[in-house]
Amino acid sequence: MKRGFWLLICFLLMCAYASPILGRTESAVAQSKVLRIANLGEYMAGDEGKDIPALLEVFEEEFDVSVEYSRFDTNERIYNDLKLNKQGDSYGYDLVCVSDYMIQKMIREGMLEKIENPGVNIPNYMQNVSPYIQEVFEKAGISEYAVGYMWGTMGYVYNADYVAHSDALSWMALWNIDYKGKGTLKDSIRDTYFLGLAYVHRNELNRLAGKYESETACIEALREVYSAGSSELEDAEEDYREFLNYYAGELSRLLNDTSAETVAKVEAALKSVSRNIFGYEVDTGKDDMTTGKVYLNLAWSGDAVYIIEEGGEQFYYAVPREGSNIWFDGWIMPKGANKELAYKFMEFISRPDIVKENMEEIGYTSVIAGDEIKEWMMEKYELESSPVEGLLRADLTYFFKGTGSDEKVYLYYPEEMEGRALTTQYPDLEIINRCTIMLDFEDEALARVSDMWVRLRANVLPPWVIILVVAAAAVAIAALAIILIRRKGGGPRAKKGWTAVKTEAK
Image (cartoon, rainbow, N blue to C red; front, side, top):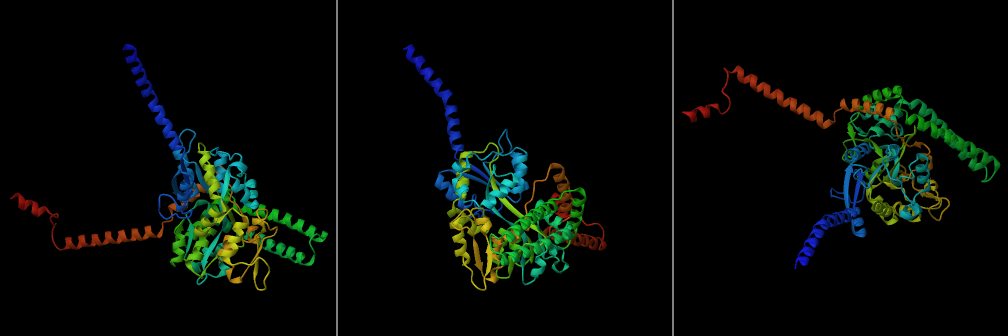
């Protein structure tokens, strides 16, 4: 009897000891099926104010997982959130989407996990990503840490009813008094600082642009004269490649300049342009353009595609001839990430069927290439793959080569499509050569630029704040006038309610 009693006690103690362990195990299993994602703005198909975009609901159902989704309007706010949420070795997210320069910064600060065995863990991505994108990622030092998502250029989207095409081909357009109060800038430190650099270095950039145009015209003429493989053409091609390397280096130097003297000049330039624009924005520029509030918007190419397709035939996109930014957004895994789920999502988002659905809705261009994407694009824009009289040619070999059946990818389109969605989404090689990426600023340089930005934004109030302040001032003046008029009409007046209180007391 006693033996049975003690056996029962031991069993109960074992259960009491095991239940927290079992609870922790169940909790760990549940947590292993939750993918925590941070992304930029409305940057995924089906993002219509829901907890998660519709595309992620498909992922949840397909892989029997849950997704926790957070939206941020700039790279810097994502970075700050990761820093604030850091607990031990974990940053609170499994996957984060940020831009090239921010990926470089996080690598430099040791915040990221490396991508292991990409051919095994993300085969869809490795088979279909554009070799051009991979090469850029490798040169930028981010290929071991990032899986590409979207890419594009920065330029002006403009309403051709009010803005001349020749004006939109120069960064100086936002300083043009003809467009006072009708242009918008990005409320994003790096993008707007880039514009300021283009203004400050405009003379040197214009000289470079002229040299690029003459060298490109020269090599095109030689290609018409000499047949492929001739020694004359080979020598000319080599000289042209050397020039392009020089040109790319100069663009990067000028458009990533952070010297104290340059930062001061950029601050003055941005203060000047701030007096000529409607305001600063991140996501409202699309509505501002399509509703006619503004005619000229500093835009990422994906937002420009949205405006062009939703706004009407009067909207166009231009990459200024002085040189521009080519940007890349990628998925990264912060330290402590659930790598298994992160790999599944990166593989899912790189599938051609998912890529097409995603691009169709948000307007941005995926880093994924291949025959399936090319055929989708040709069908969408009704393009020709062979020369047709009267059609313009886009050379997209740089993007698609090595991912499909064609060695050369030339697409032919009518002239009226120039500057519209097609050429915005897939820029020609000539435009690509005129672009450079934003580089990570080292701490001292970043501090200079950040201090400048704080001073600039502290002195610039958005229009709605100005209207509110004016309205409040008007109300205050009216109230003061009423008080003065009442005082002129007699002696001090009793406070409201005082008579009633005295009467009750009686």
